[in-house]
Length: 358
Image (spheres, rainbow, N blue to C red):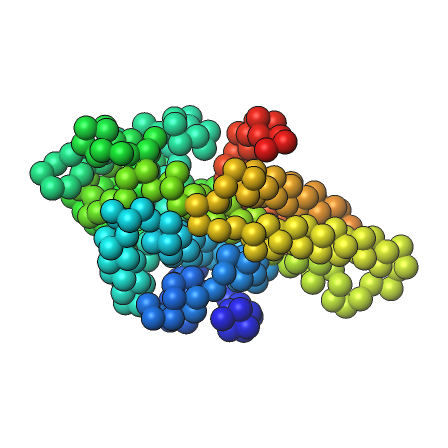
């Protein structure tokens, strides 16, 4: 699967508009569902392999890579949920896995719609609520940075729910909401600095009926799926660095001083990459506190180091690359376009301090 993605990535376009052709190729190759087992149409890839896939896509087009993390991460999270499911919910979790894997095979796109203004990445600060309606739930609230926008088929969204409506629930739960369901309004307001092609618009829910609860009550605390996404997010800026290194190293510079600087940058990139892949290899569904703390450290360090590397490489690139809309300028913008802020850096640093020594 990794080899196939690298082959596909060489054909990807890169720009400020939604990368429809890139996404279509990934859907056709069943990349988004690769974490599913072979019996469900996937390739049974590990989180480490998923990170390598995201990095390879990010080297070609960071917007496509960020989009990929959403359904790819969901597939991994659903697998994790089924593995970690309590006995009482195991049969339902596996049935849902089979149903969603079938949607992936049919080409449906599941996109993340979770961030909220002022929440700072904190689940506890989520304001969207899910209200019991008959045999289901309806969501009301506003989200920002909803990946894929109207190109998605289903959003998966966090919402708070009352314990009396969902016994055993956690701080928040994930719900599936069809993009075209009544009460779902997708704005057209995304014009971010870098990665504009992700179509990360504002979404408003007005008693929008959810098609299902993701997995089971208290799923986030039980399966610990967020760490899966954190590793994937960290792979995107590494792709930006790889793109810059490739551009500056082809053709090889004649200056010994420049070759030395590029060699130093290559070592820093390889060290950050090794750190991420090793941490990803250690992840297991229901990750313990030590694993969660390491993933947060890894994601924070890798995104920071990648941003520094891109800045250093851009400064080395010389006048021929100081072009608005150029490949290196694009990578420079993309590396700052949200990946280091998922979760926001301040929140991550606070958590690192609180968890030091865990």
